Image (cartoon, rainbow, N blue to C red):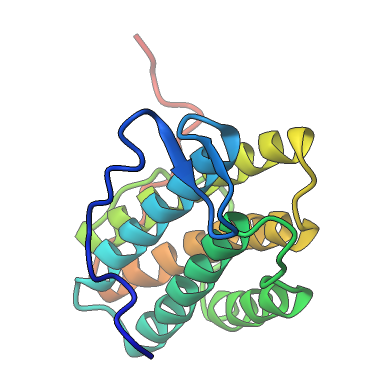
Length: 184
């Protein structure tokens, strides 16, 4: 493969318009670009989680997720092109089930906290939920591959479970929501 990016700036987006991979031009504030941006942000935060000393099994899962997210963004950049399939969601479910079976059952909600890697993973989970919401909004305007929606829904669940695993690896205890906590 030759050089894909020989020049970083093109000046073609200076007026608020950007190009999709199929050559079409759309507004930078359109819903499709919003979703692509959310996916990019999510992928960056997954990278933040990976910058910490985390267990190899979590690192390997997150590497695969980053590749999937790049493909997902690519699919949205090429209207009518499909890259994310049912198999992608099934992979997430398998990893989710494998990690979750070693964790204690939850009796209360967990507050997003913990060590740095755990907190970054909770942040990734919340950005994943926002990305999913934006994708649902895009789907109201233009049909989106349904497997993107299921993938993002399952990914947020997996990021929650990874945060629980990371909490234990960082030696932190989970902060449970206390419904009886006195409130001002």
